[in-house]
Amino acid sequence: SDRMSYWIVDADKKSITYDKSSADSDEAAMIATQYQRDRRPLYPPLADFADAYYWAQKGDDSLMTAYVAACDKVKSDNPKP
Image 1 (cartoon, one colour):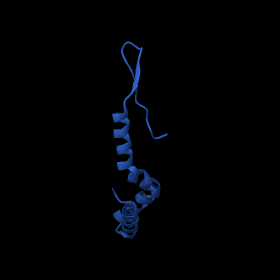
Image 2 (cartoon, rainbow, N blue to C red):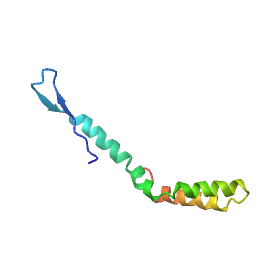
Image 3 (cartoon, helix red, strand yellow):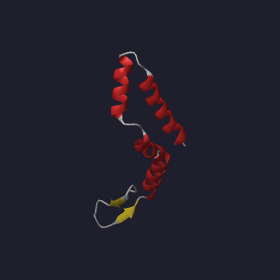
Image 4 (cartoon, rainbow, N blue to C red):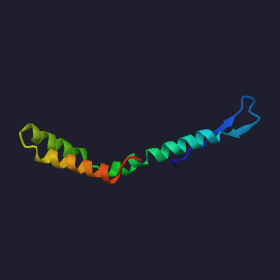
């Protein structure tokens, strides 16, 4: 699960409390970065980047242009909040 529990055991080990503020803060962080998790599987493989880089070094930028366009589409289809 992406949710974390924040149970705090007091030093005397006789009481346990739940720290909701930490949980709320983590939940807000999870929501704020959801776009990153949505994007990750959609990016083209790094092997494609390596091939595009190789050919760009040889003077053919067409694969690199296509790779960057694919990355731009992932970003535009899954914008930051």
